[in-house]
Length: 116
Length: 186
Image 1 (cartoon, helix red, strand yellow):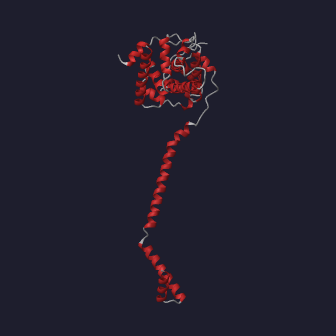
Image 2: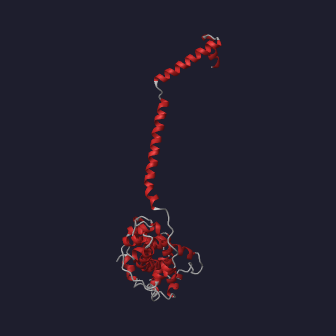
Image 3: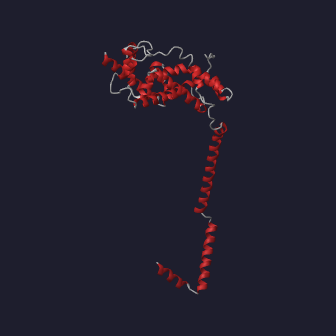
């Protein structure tokens, strides 16, 4: 005999009882004690729109991610022409400054070496 | 006044409840169909009729106030049982802190039952209820639902939020403890 059967053999019928007529009058008694209508919570429309809102949020994140990626890519890998243009502007600027300052190349080199 | 109603299935009750004009009628049907079964579920946990009556009323009050949170993804009885079990366990926790029944006296609960007007069992029955009352909450609940109502573990799992494997283990331990209790008192 397993343990469950052992317990069933030990037990008789249901030992608990209720007052006479208890169940017959139970439903009206419970209903009479209820407060007003249940409080209405969030409208169903919000619940229906929630998946769409999540999808829209995901799309926004994806768009921003792509935009940031391409923007970052442009900064890391400038076009050769732009680089050349920057070099041209830098060299031109230095030449103009040098002319203005009446310095020759040798004096510029010595001044740069002095800073090292 | 007696309420005579034709039994309805869950879908019919839910349809009534969702319509604001028939919410009350739907809830009344729910009370009429499930109150007795819920009463016995609670009574086996709290043991005393007056306490079971209080807990049952609190169960339906809570069900009424949280009606909008029930979306029909489980059976109505499973949903109500979850509320009832939680209310019964809350009641027992509060009662444990009261000095009315001595927890140091091993036979306190059994003697209390023997003196109760609405308990017709003999001393062995009273001892069995004592043994069940001393089980930890999970074991006590799963034993009550499985042994007396032969409820499926899948439904008990939804009520208690515990895995089926865990419930089977708890039930096995509960049965073992109750068996040992009887053998000690034979």
